Image (cartoon, rainbow, N blue to C red; front, side):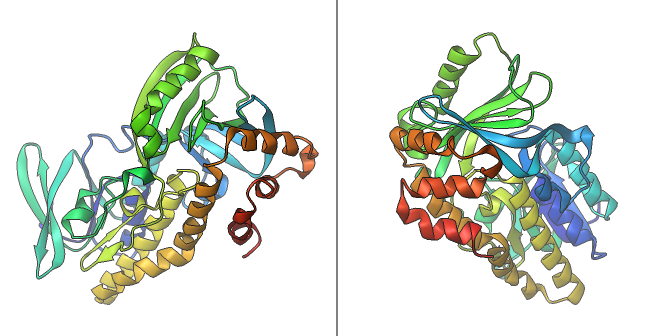
Length: 389
């Protein structure tokens, strides 16, 4: 281990590994520190992503694809199922392998990786981040850098230590829980989404196939709902009613920041990527693709800054992210606030109306257009997403 690197990345999830890779591709020295013993473990994710979201960063490989998705089903509160074909396919990943492969790409680009390295502080001089402090094998270490990239998840202590406002209101933090279960006889090419107060008030319930008869089954509800009733209780009720004999293989729970990006995601000597920067899609709660996009943008800018010896260049990261996805996420957030407040009756009406649309004319855009009849105030935001390029 060297005492100094050009860049230190804290966290080896998809955003961190992607940032490390694109920074290292500039020929600079990069160290990535991961607190857990294995990259990609534990998995806290529904594991769904579009093919386009993957293909921008890595060639799709069956060894980390559990299921190929070509349609999704919306299930309304009264049980009406609407099946909608996707314009492009999606994947349900095996994140333990997928994350590992992303880290290997970073390593192949020149980044060094150290696991079980617990970062517990920053080196800050003259109001600029200059490195990190970490514990490894019971010993305390310090390593300096020109830039630190915080990819340490939604809790992002790294961002907080640097003075970046990472606070999130509990109402914007969805309470989520998920199990991976076997003995789930569903169509393996379909993702299922359930809406309504009995499934997931102010959120949604999902079933994502994982091959054979296994699936990820979970839900996310608003922080306000979570204070009144746990997400786990909704999940348990659903399983007892629908799959009482299923075998539960894994169970996870946590918070998902379904809100717009932090006001500031860079500061002297540091940037934040992925969940640490709140780069999750606030409408879906999905963060794999958007985290990798943030990692690519951030890693590229940091690599350029170090290569040019113009470290202030990292402060352009905020605008670059906002132009690529941040602005779109603000629209998604407004759509979310409209849709998640629909009554059960509105969800039923949407499902009934959309089932009258011929299958070959169904699509996500048309689904939102149908939803507009139940909430016309969403028109402008939906138009921005689907009509404005």
